[in-house]
Image 1 (cartoon, rainbow, N blue to C red):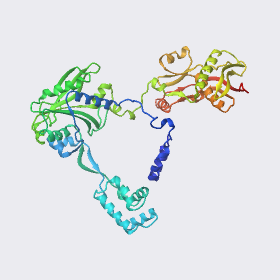
Image 2 (image 1 turned 60 degrees about the vertical axis):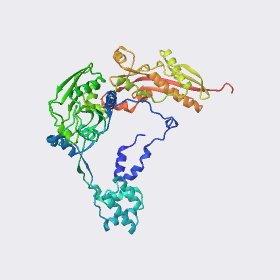
Image 3 (image 1 turned 90 degrees about the vertical axis):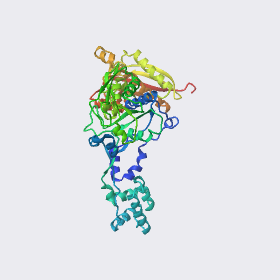
Image 4 (image 1 turned 45 degrees about the vertical axis):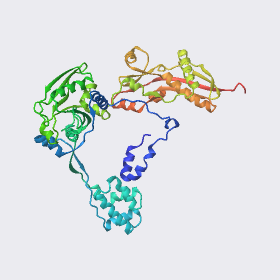
Length: 531
């Protein structure tokens, strides 16, 4: 169910534990059809970045590269070993890892008194001593932070909620903690991991070594923009062996990128001069695609022996890497990497067809006979649409819910037509707007280029009437259903899904289903023939 987020935010601040325990109250009990194994999930769409990763993995594997995982947490000392004099410039843009220090919590008379007040009893001497030992063990990292509440509830013989209250009110040291940086960093380049991986295995496996790794890197950009993210995915590979040269980079680039439809390649010297590459080996790969033209897609180079020597690696190594998000942008013709990667934070774009799928009816008959009644009502109404009142036409006579029912379409008013002028209007979605329009020249553009929902005002009203007649028949009573002037979707039994309405309001579009319907449908319960 939809729940009040503001209410839960308030409750969480006032009494977190109570609000947490109230969580299950927002769940709607499932109907039988929504219980496993009857509940199932169909296939769905992929994310463009992870679809690109999948294709890159398959491409690397198909050309003989083994997959590996490189460390994502890198000590800053590794950056100095790899980048040499450039290290400080690199470290200026990396993310350092930090954490909260363990507080040295003292327990004096005041703290014990406050705990007694919360527990509504006095701590025993044994409990007080156990509390001190537990907090001391936490300080020495013998107890993990996520285990502290559970451990304290045990030594204080109380529940977790009371412990949370004690930590919040008695020990402000926990709330006042400020994170402290370590010397550990998040991987900024996949290269940071390759040196460590190759250093560990190069003497232990056959040559040439061919490995690839696809993973996340983090780079502290001054600001994210349409082409830069602070966190991105790198698809990187290495070829290591005694005979490796720059030609390996060209061959790998062609083999890898051909799988994505690229046909021609150019290799241009990269103006950037990373110190972990040999001089004059850093190369940009440009490739031609039938749909995209010439684009820069990858970079490769030969690792410098100076950097390799830091890890005791005594063979040449070619490294090629490309940004997954950039490749995904090219493949999807995207203009903004932020929207490509995180579409949930950008305005949703729906086609008229997608919006039309979110427009249904509020009420429909549940039985087969009820559904046939809808068709009979529509046919009878259309056939006699020009009739003027007072008039009445039998649309159906038969069994519904075990009762013999007669249903009539009628117009009780003098000189009024059986159907109001808007009865034959049909619901279309046109350029994001939901419109109820007649088949006239004025609305020819909407009917030609819009998307029909397949719902007319008459069909929607007949469905409502059939549902109510069906329900009334269960109780053996007659009923009359009238639809008069339509101003809102609900007036004609139309349901517009909340996400469709949100899209319409967010984009200043409109919903216009106004119109005079003036339709009357009446049912009678006939006596049984056996009576």
